[in-house]
Length: 226
Length: 226
DNA sequence: CCATGCTCGGGCAATTTGCCCGTTGTTCTG
DNA sequence: CAGAACAACGGGCAAATTGCCCGAGCATGG
Image 1 (cartoon, each protein chain N blue to C red):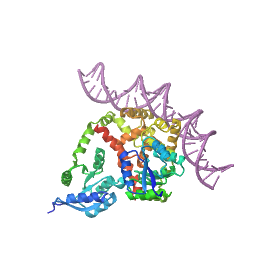
Image 2: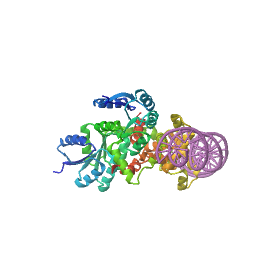
Image 3: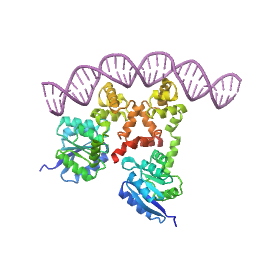
Image 4: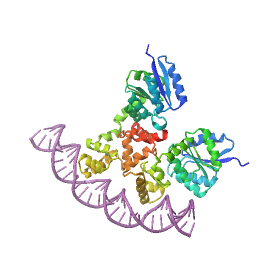
């Protein structure tokens, strides 16, 4: 009678986890047996509980979700990971699947879509939410495919930290690599994206939705209202 | 008897539109004659029905709300647009009015405020909800604003060129001064604004509205929303 | 088992930065 | 009108960073 699917939830917001937990528990074939709030914890919890499926957000504080996916897959090549992200940008989906995720759905999907996606992933099948699938399909046709896709997973991760206004040194510490490696990646990223300055890089990142404009603008608001 | 004000509602959620429609219909001088769920439709519906007032959310899928305002105003320079947004951030109000909106009120306002705002806009008067007005006033005093004020005219000019993704050399040529002068100014600007990297500088410039968000976001999203 | 590709970093010249300085104007002001 | 104040400009120079190349260590996939 092991047709019950065990799940680990990874999201940095406890309330969000709670919401999804209650949502998922309504299904009697789903059981949430673990939770984690960041990449590091996700890894250790996975080792401990070995759930059938990991449902995770990739926009985590500190160590990125992508890294966590990789580590989990390294530990268990058969790990089934469903990314559940707020980002509609297909590049995120690409990076996530490249890192080893089986599925990618956006938070704007219907609850049923999440349930359905979990079922698909449980069967070891790839799944994408409709909006992402369409966007990716579009990219396949129009040669308009994003230069972002040429970045490796690591580079993508570093890019996101960079445009989050972190210095090369900060990133080196965060990722436990040499500052020189970061600056090399920084250079390669600029080269691949065809820009020559950090200012262009930032603008490009904003265009590509790597930086949430709302966050950016909201910060300004908070600063001023203090 | 044309003292009835005709209205077009634009919001991506049908349920929300329904709510406001019933709210507005209670006023016997208001009539909702059209609806739209995104920027593109807003534009075509406006052309078709030419309502007295457009009441729209700007957080539409593809973030094309601002763009829609511009297109509508381009078609009809006298179009009266009231933005009805969830964002308390005054920068949104700024961008919206810059794009051509007459009024901006937040969704947290009272229903009466909405009615009142519609009346104001109908009279071709600018209107802001109290919270936004206050926030904008705060910004006038705010520290970051004064940080900008500490820049000299020349520095300000250089800053704008910088965040327009021009290199020190480009700027030197453009202004007929030595690259060294530009780089000195570049340094002073960062110092005065309290940032240490060009990435932070760019983000700050965006926060301060030195960069038009529309320019940045425009093309990036047309791909996805098609 | 070889080719490919990613991650990681060393090396090193070339450039840029950070910070200082002095020169030349132009206001503003007592 | 003398002189203070400040803007604009740019030189100098040590320190830091960038641009570009390289090789090593590992997975991955034929």
